[in-house]
Image (cartoon, rainbow, N blue to C red; front, top):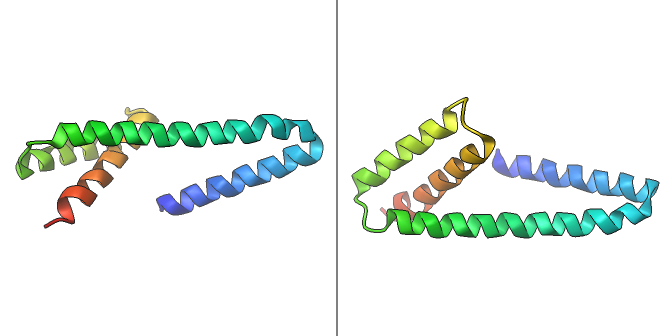
Length: 104
C-alpha cells in the first residue's frame, strides 16, 4: 500500500512538472531543485529517526520492545495524532519488524 502511495505521489509530481513546464518553463527552475531538496530532507529525517530508534532499543528486552511496538500502533491509530507522529510511528514499527522480528 505504501509503495502504491509513493508511486502515485511520484506520478502526480511528474504531471505537475509537465504542466508547469508547458505553461511557464521558468517554473522548472524552482520546482526541480525544490523536489530534490525535499527528497534529501526526507532521507536525512529517516536517517535521524533510525539513529534514534537504534539508541532507543539498545539493551531492551523483547517484552519491552513489544510494549513499545503496541504503544506505537496506538499512536498510529489515534485520530488525534498528527500526520508526522503517525508517519514516525509507522516507520518505527517497520524498523522493529525488520530488525527484531525477522531475526528470530
